[in-house]
Image 1 (cartoon, helix red, strand yellow):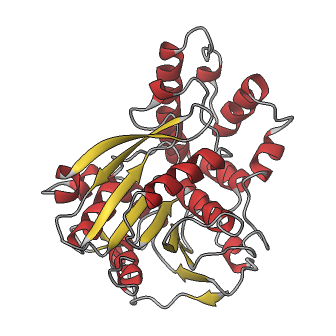
Image 2 (cartoon, rainbow, N blue to C red):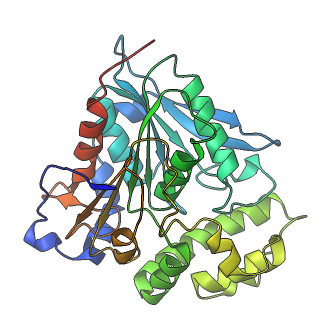
Length: 330
């Protein structure tokens, strides 16, 4: 594992607070203005195996030979329309990339597509969806970038590529990836504003699912619970095979040497002041030579904001990394 060489990032003095960076990162203000990536987007439903369907959005690029195709994975209770997805997609599209934004199950407007509910351990369906998108890319270089929980998925996909390579997947980036989800859940619960933010979105999602499938789900009592861990415990006990939340979290924990078998060049980006992700997890990683890590002093969770327009520095970092591969078709 090596240190990721990036353009220097110095947060403005008024953005040297991890909580402020975190909340501003999701501000709709950042996504205002023209977005050709979004204008070009067309919805796609992917058959991800065992009857599972996932909703994505593909923005084809008008260039004769685009630089590549970038698949973007959102965070927990985010969607293809989350601010960071729209802003990153816009920046990549401007730089000459096609963009495919993928919704996880029960995220965005996709609750109706599957009877089962979302769990973060559902790697196979996401892996299958990314594989299909890559296979349909007509020989373009393919790149994958994920944010928060999406970063965790991206890292697991990079590891899964060892026995099952994805066509033309050249590079993976994970921004503010949750490496120890049990600890991250506890940290989110300790911050009242962060806890309320995620509880509100999760309750809305569960309510939608219950309304669509009243014969399968009754979340009435679960919706009254006051912590993320309590909701997790209740859902797992009632609707999963897991004996405990700890066993569930363990199945997608990526600490220690969990990334030793990564088979694709992979970059991880995090901040020391991230209020959700403990930076120590990154310092203690024992990854292989295909993995690079960058730990910035400031940036919060999915932030790394720069200047009054609140552009995120990782939009440039990601494009710069992918540009190194050049446009390619077989």
